[in-house]
Image (cartoon, rainbow, N blue to C red; front, side, top):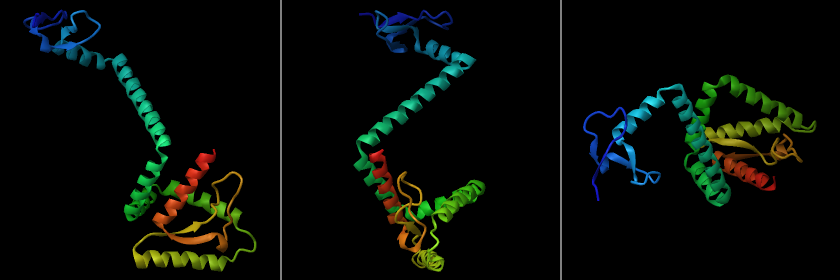
Length: 202
């Protein structure tokens, strides 16, 4: 069995007779090896990638791989919800302060968008605040939330037991009876659990 073959590429430089290890394997050719050597193949591919057609092909290939990866990960997450939820819970518990600081940095960097989202949520609160709500009691609850955050060093949130906007068929009220102070990890865990329940219903 021959251990060498000729490189047939028209732009080959040097001796054309080369060891088989200098060629790529392929099932499309009877010999089992490409007709052009690795050096010529790489040079041709590099030249092609510099053309508009090559750049477009690379862009399409990247997008196809990205779409495939997103689809594959999505399917895996759907099939392994328990693992995903457990991993998310562990991450939130172990990184509560880091996530709080990260959120603060994002709000500082995106003040316009952050202001828009805050006003949007404020509008929902106004619409969901009943006439009989004890506003002073609610303000005291928010002050207590700040006190706990400052004293413990653990971020706390005023949690809406029934969310203001989450389900199509029910909307929680913005009143003292629907508010509860929770550490950030418990707040996120409850929010995540509710989102998973809603998704399973959908």
